[in-house]
Amino acid sequence: MAIFKGWSFCLTAVAAWLASGLALDAQTLGNQSLKSNYFFRYVSMVASATGSIGDARSIQGSITFDGAGSYTFTGQQVTGVAAAVAASGTGTYSVDPAGVVSLTSPLRAGDFVNARLGPEALIGSGTENTDSAFDLFVAIPAAASSGAFSGPYSAVTMEFPGGSTANAINTIFNLRISLPGAFFPVSVYGHTPGLASGSPTTQVISNAAYVFAGSGSGTLTFGSSASLLSGSKTVYVSADGNVIIGGSTAAGAHDFLIGVTTLANPTAASWNGNSWTAGLRFESAAQPNWVSHTGSLSAQGAGSISFYRRLDQLGASALDFTASATSALNPNGLLSFELAQVALGVNGMFVASAIDPSDPGAFEIYFGAPWTPLSGSGVFLNPLGVVNAASFAPAGNPISPGEFITLYGSGLADSTQVAKPPYPATLNNVTVTINGTKAPLYYVSATQINCLVPYAVTGNTASIVLTNGSAASNSVTVPLAPTSPGIYSVASGGAQVLAIEHSNGSLVTADNPANPGETVVVYITGMGAVTPTVTDGAASTGNPFNKTALPIADIADQQASVLFSGLTPNFPGLYQLNVTIPNTISSAGNYPIGIQTNNAFHDRLFIPIQ
Image 1 (tube, one colour):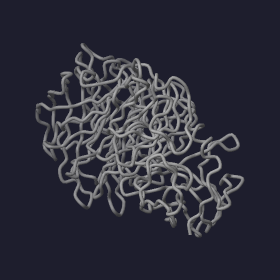
Image 2 (image 1 turned 180 degrees about the vertical axis):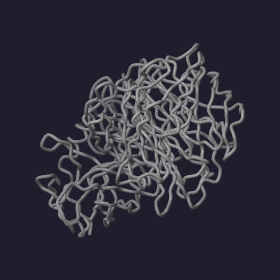
Image 3 (image 1 turned 90 degrees about the vertical axis):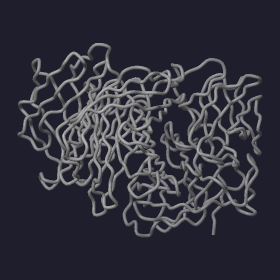
Image 4 (image 1 turned 90 degrees about the horizontal axis):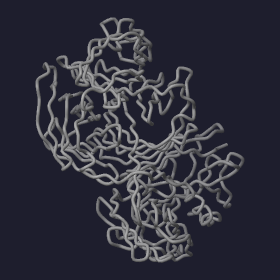
């Protein structure tokens, strides 16, 4: 039996959710934004159904983008267990106004890299490929003469010696120059199956050294005394000296090193700002798995992180993953985040390595580099400012039919107005079209708009244009997916808590927790098409109920029964899930709740249970 108590705080809460904005201070991007010489490192592994590597390829060198959609590259390539050979070639690329880049793979014909462009780096992975290739691509601007290698650097590595997962290695460490050509002793924290049963271990390398040529490339040498980090690696330094990338060119070497200039004296508030991210992960569990991902991350400066990832997983379709989590600063200056160790760098960059005692079978590195802030004149829609109005998942997360979305920009409306149901297609002389269909408008102001995605919008992308009077905005294109769930939150007792209600309509809070076996109402958006259909902008009457396909819900990593998924009566565009909390939860606490549809997963939000 569905529970429908209404949502007493709905309309005022939506206005409150619109309060946060995005900084705007640069122009939009395009192919001309990627026109210069870069250094690059690219590692790609084709995995078998059992997780073993069937075809390992690695390449690094120089790549030149012409600003018109074509590139050339030269470098050294390692294939399988063979020695490195010279490699060169050409490819194509495209850059959209937000900095989303698609480029043909320098390693595999027919593959593409789903990449993101920022001022410090171009990063990505092949999330849309179908050949079971899992990869990581990083390119950094090359200096006209020579970038300065000075540091100190915080670096991570992931290695698959001989193109095999048997002796995979993950590390994180600092590089500090003691004398020209030499480092202070390097304390390497990491894990590998053949050392301490895969548990995290620290090894110290006392004789690490470096040599750099005038071309921005050099060699790091770590000797042979440590099993976590040894031998020589060819590396490149970015034009501003703040990023180093590279790896070994020895026969059969397939590894990745990424380093950023260390942020001095980090605090819990130091991780702050918006970044593009990309990473590669291998899990050597009973059922081995590979994952590569491209996405974005928003750090709020107090240990609160939200992120979006487009995931390519072994044996599964690509998935849109959104989550919120927390980070904590460790005494060694690293942050613990999602079973990984994170080192903060300057200019909002970071590197991360999957090193945690509870997860010895995980090997992963990922890199975060800042967005390019965007701006424009007149009526301007920020290409980075189209977000789920409930989760505010960072840029790149798809929108879906029926979803409440928030648009950020400037000159969007002459004044602030709020509509009453049914939401109109024009409000305060403002209209928004999505793939040519007018969107119902709830809230308009000079810098932000809240509207509903029309149910008739179809395809893989959505083009959004706003008109204020007779002035039209730039067109913004974002991914479109059948669903993109986001759970609402609401201010309560000075904090944001999930918009989850008891059956009596009271909010579930720490002081009013839910109970095992209780059915609660979860308010959500982005659940997609409903049956029977409803007119855009109109409220569901509840007679009949407008339902969606039932998602999968889990609470405390246990599957929870979903009794109903559909529109809440009397509130246009507002969905609800009626979810029964598992009886097997035996102790009080804040437990994560996750919602999974056929194409998306929304995770790491917490519900208090007693």
